[in-house]
Image (cartoon, rainbow, N blue to C red):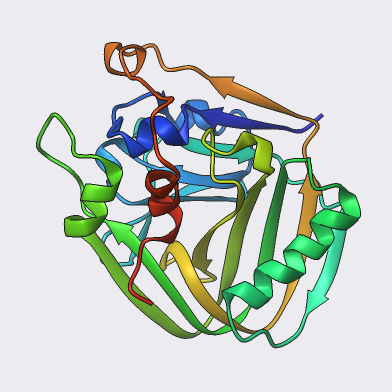
Length: 241
């Protein structure tokens, strides 16, 4: 059975919990596809084919060390229950509409993982600079000052897409959360928008949800019920385009 395994909650990340909650080696025991970030929000995480990559603040990519740590991540084993071809799609909203159609066919209250391999006219993405000062700022404040945005043009690569249903909003982003990595594994990041020339999607649902509750004193003292919808959405949707 494939479960979505998650380290911590999006509410905690939004409130500045950027501390080490699991190593990459521990995370990869639970899945071969997924996304997240690294301790001190030192870049965006892309897990694909069982390898964990760090998309750095300049948009370049490196393989994450096994002893590197994550404060927040979601991984699963991809079950290719549904595969479908994708033609030219102008923007992210059009792409997500296609994925939403597949969700409705399989059941909107499941958790899904999807990879899309294709050729992209453009990918508009971001990553973040590592935070050095504690206590950490909220994630929204980090994005105001230390987010870096970039555009990749005429590139082949993969989108790693994770879907959580509306009733899990806060634990993760309700709806789709999407990261990108190029075929040559040199470029990547959190995706705001993209233009697809052609591609193929592989999508599967999970049978459950497994959750690591951080045992750090910082997490245990957090009040997580007062995180606003705007703070949650800032993790996903910050950007200028």
